[in-house]
Image (cartoon, rainbow, N blue to C red; front, side, top):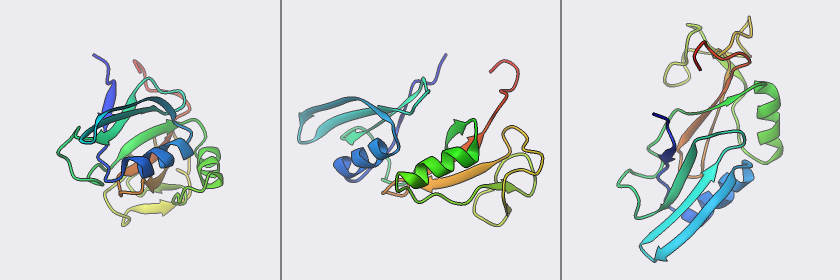
Length: 145
């Protein structure tokens, strides 16, 4: 099995569409069947999985998704790229526990993981509805990935 699509709940499809285009996501389709049903699919650069935003596609509340992750090779370069595109991105951080990030900001330590270990450095941003995204640095994937 492969994860193919994540549905991201948004309140304003056109506003969200502009945001995801700003990120550099490729728009695959924008299908309007009616005023009550629209499907817009985007694929992040280099990803096999896509996201879908739209109207009439999910009962989830706009902004309710948190912790969506985009894996990047160089966290600082990826953050700089997004900032250059006008996206409000947190500073790069790692978790005090060193394994994954805790909810909230309490365990966040400014700067990349001290060893620059794979899966250890993050930066966060949100879409216009508050759906939360994370950048995660991975240079060498875990075995079997």
